[in-house]
Amino acid sequence: MVYINRSLESSFLKHYELYKVVAVLGPRQTGKTTFLNNELKKIKNANSISLDDPDAKFLFNDDIKLFEKQYCSGFDLTFIDEIQYGKDVGQKIKYLADKGYKLFLSSSSEVLASKEVLSYLVGRASILRLFQFSLSEILEAENIKVKTNKIIERAIFDQCIYGTYPKVFITNDIKEKRIVLRNLYETMLYKDVSNNFGINDTTNLEKFVKYLSIYCSKIISYDNISRDLGLAHETIKKYLNALEKSYFICQVLPFYTNKLKEITKQPKIYFYDLGLRNAILLDYPINLDTQGFLFENYIFSELKKQGYTPKYWRSKTKQEVDFIIENGKTIIPIEVKLSCNSQIIESSLKSFIDIYKPKKAYVVYYKGKTNKIKQNGCEVFFLNTFELLEELKSIGN
Image (cartoon, rainbow, N blue to C red; front, side):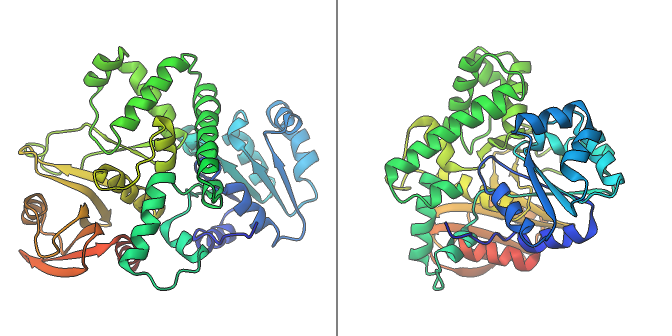
């Protein structure tokens, strides 16, 4: 298989020069191991092991000095894969870093980024995240140089239905794509979520994940979930925490500065990968005509891949803007539309512009025409997904 270049590489190299430890986190099977092994080839005297290996895991957990002697001593760098299976990771990685070892780490759990672990690694480690393939990575891999609206539409449709996991992307057969996604779902649910977070009631966990799949891109209510599934609020919180730390779903919080006008604190739920979401429901739409929520979720995932932490805005009068991203003190509203009239700004976006006075706002469309108009001193851009992402790159994050 031909190696597909990842946009993370440039920032990774800078972090490698600055820190003893560089950790790459992200969902299972997004290419973390492949990426780090590719970087490892550039280092002459390097070692690679995984804590999926029982012997390596035993030494790491039982005696870090024996682990050091076996796997780190004599090497310029050691890559420890699946670090989430280790115990007391923060203390042990601090020990190895303080002994002068260079380390690459990978994890399919956000646990490594917890305060308990990071408190040991301040000044020693950098944490980067590698998600599923981004739109720009896919277009580059397919050598698409002319990016017309129709070409972008076709690419996005496929990604909204089957997602962008590397193994799914390189598989051409639709039946095989669905098998890979289903196997990935079961592995993540039972290994990353159930086992790692001590959730024994997998029947209710499965029901909960299906519930979230149905309410993808929507605001969720603990009270409604409790009523519909018969789960206690504490159980709901535990499930959400486990799913989020395993990169299954993400809770997007509301943006507000005026608590009297913007009262909701309930999160919206998005999936990191829509292929995985569709596999959970065994539902693969044949078009996006009535699936605006999938396109909205897709834009969320692309914003995350660019390093943003999107929020949503909803006023007391139920005016709503899909995403608000912040770049320093700059506030950027983004409205998502399956199709739109590029001459008309809808009332919710107008309302946000009137209240917050942003310099720029964006309407990203699946089908539409590129345009720019003014609203109360704000430049409003109508763009396709690729154009939006390129524009955001130029702004920086």
